[in-house]
Length: 141
Image (tube, rainbow, N blue to C red; front, side, top):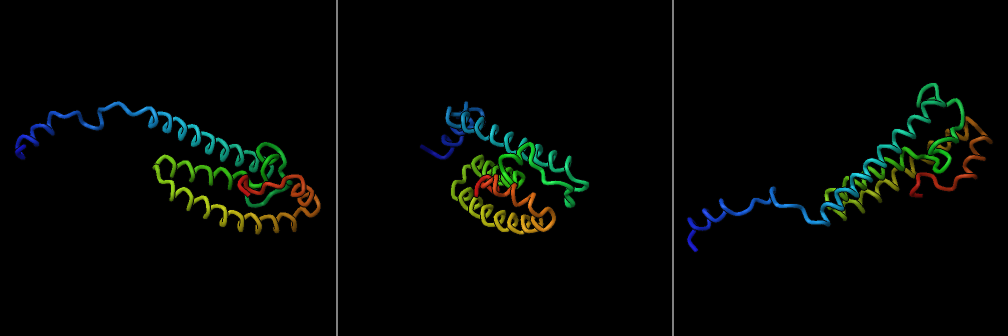
């Protein structure tokens, strides 16, 4: 086949952007959409409860034990990790998603330990009891 006939054939061929997606692509797209929705909802829900029980986000006035904080001690970190994971699943980059999960686990574990030290210093026994009640620090750990 000559190059001119290949060129003409390429003009008449069905372009990729007009072909219907495969079933696996559609289901993966819906799965990622739901994961993103869950991540954003968890981030919003956590921030809402944290803001409700704080003068400022940095200066808490009470140990928040309602909303997502009744299941996880640091739900904002957990939802951020979930969003990162979802982005890489959407990009179909499994090695990158494993890497980002590992980095999130290490980073947020260190950050949560520092934050919990400050919370124990600020709230004393109230936060210590809360820590005993909830084993999961960020949802992953």
